[in-house]
Image (cartoon, rainbow, N blue to C red; front, side, top):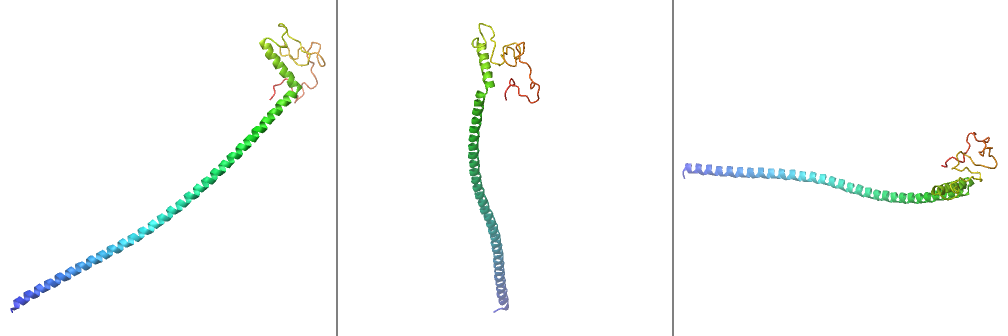
Length: 190
């Protein structure tokens, strides 16, 4: 055989070996690149899984806090209901005591002779305003003899007869009239 043929065969064999080596090298680099990408993906997946675990733990903790807050709110609501019921009970007791006090005051006013005279005077005023009742005898004023002032008379204390009455029919001033702290029976009640 001719040496040229052998050189051509050797060159072709060398080209085939180089091509095979380049293909193997490219495949190896491709595998290496894929392995690197796979390891990076695994690392990213692990980091992401850790973050998700932390977020899940935070969500569980928030759920626990929400449950505790709901339980606390229920307890506060129950406490508020209890306090409201207690306040209503106290209000009822106070209202009952206030009505007892008002009843006692009304009873005291009924028993107080000055109050009865005032009531009679007010009743007489109301009846006189209507044109009937004590104090009107065919248009003439009645002179009271019970010691109380007649509000229709022209002066305070006019028409009083009996002890303490002056010569003109008015009550004579007494030693306690100008005394400090004197209780005026004619003053409005509080």
